[in-house]
Length: 563
Image (cartoon, rainbow, N blue to C red; front, side, top):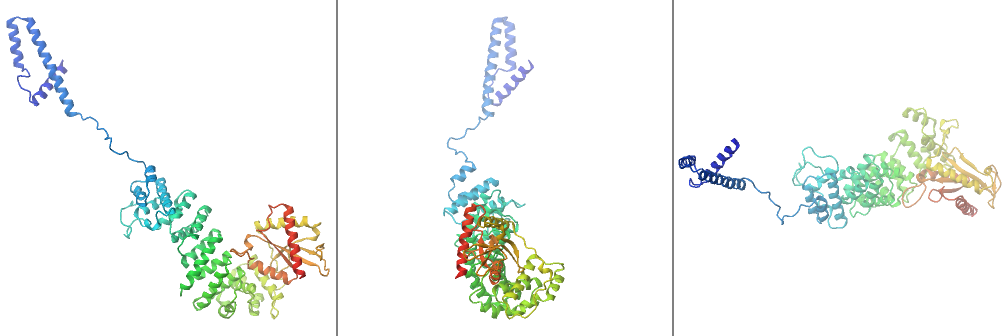
């Protein structure tokens, strides 16, 4: 009852507020008057009818007011206009983008690494299809933003929309290089390589070397992309690339050739800057990269500016020539210009040993060089400066090589030789794992080639700084003889295995300096040297094929020795 009265009162207030007239809505006074009239007339039926009419009128007002209130206070939900376009998702927008601008616009909103990778991949595709070039977007702040997301090093201050020419921009351009290192997959990183400029590719290569990240997929993609890039690298970039290849032990012949060509282009313009040239020379020697044109260009440049070179740099160049076993045509320039500027006091004791050994390989030594190493004081000084009780096997090998050269080649040498009781003679030579497999394969093949193992001697040390992998003695008709046979006209054959590290890199598959000197010393001691390079002899081949290979080479080598 109370709720009905309350509702009625609210209905009346609403009605009055909306301007209903007094004639339309009965007042309390009208109702009281009507009740008095009904009582005075004593007409109950008429009173009932009037009450019913009043109730129906109030009810109609209630309905009208409720409809009016609902209409004015409740807003129907807005329906989407049929003409409003539905927002595309990121993948659809990226697929539909056909220009660099459209692709980069997608980076304006918050993107994760997956979306950033999609944007970079799209840019790579546009660049590869020649619909865009790297210079179109490499300085765009949106591109740098994507690079930073991929490099996993977001700036604390967030990304700002400023022109790339503004120095205070939060994202460094190095992010273009580091982005390749930040992605998770090698395949994605190799795709991003295509979006980089030549100098950026070199920086990525160097970054991988510093981080010791040897990703073959990325390295091959970088090497291929650099080789086919139309721009030229400067000498500093060539130096960095050679150093990185050596650090990562990643040798690509095509990339080495490209570097050699760019060095040849940059050397004539390099004046008074020998530090970068010295770095190139050192890397070429360590890599054992034998490119005769490059070495001739380097020699010409070093001779022209030898006054700017330190003695250590000149010794390094001579050592590089020895390591790749290359004696230039204008070798007289080395003897007259470079060697006189190098003295023992300019180098530490180990460098001087390397220098004298290099002169022996190139046949540019003098008696004074040999004597400086073979004298008894040298070993004492070496042990004292090195603060050690014994030499390394490689150092012993070089001293033994120098002593062998002094004995067998230096006819005018009158100085001392290595003391037979010297600890240098106690040098045990071993094989690398790769070479050990090849040597064992050689021995198995020789066992099948000859009727008995008594005709073969293996790992023979002649105290010359190396060991003979295998040797045999053959008669004129190629009949095997006992190893100790001294029959006239018999041929003594030394089998020397050359694995990957024994051969210079480059187009010319030449033995390196160590193996070249070994061959010279063997031939001087009456051996016919039969080389077994790894690219001709494989342990995976059948025994019959290997036997036929060695038999054919024996025929050729004995035929040459008889002529």
